[in-house]
Image 1 (cartoon, rainbow, N blue to C red):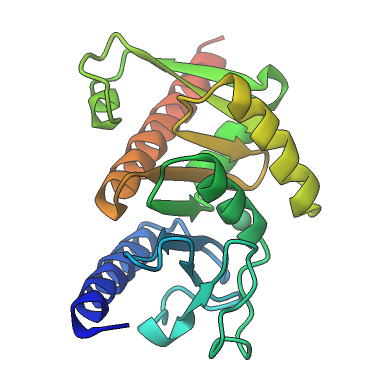
Image 2: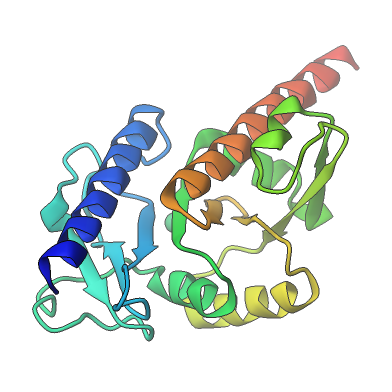
Length: 217
Ligand SMILES: [Zn+2]
């Protein structure tokens, strides 16, 4: 990696470290959970940087990142590290989408929302000003759908299921795993962060509206 690319790479690492710290501060990554990745800069675009497994995000540092190939295997020099158990979801998304960064949160709001609406399988988000934070949306009247998949420890099977859904819904900007959390992405780390924040904000609003309606009955 020459100097120019190394600088690009370090900028991306620093940007993601800030996002990981912020998300942890918000309570979106309890008990060593969650994982984060970005596509490495040219000419290494078919390799990725991802958070190692089992690290408390309160203490997450640059050394806790590792590089993987497009099959999710550690690149030379990183064999001693363990990629996240959910690496297969990241590599599937990179194969399938023109995305540069993927962020995965385990927030209370996304977990509650995914369980409350689990049976619906897909929820339309509409009427929120914050939707304009999603790329390509310029009115609160737009509708963004978020699918909810059953949680599974079989990441390969889960990846296949989500990939098939994508084939029919290529504009999807994120998805939920029931009782687990949110995956969101973007064409840059900043965009992926913005999309995550939009979804998390709307889940919190809708959870509160749901509680309010139930108490109202
Ligand atoms: Zn997870």
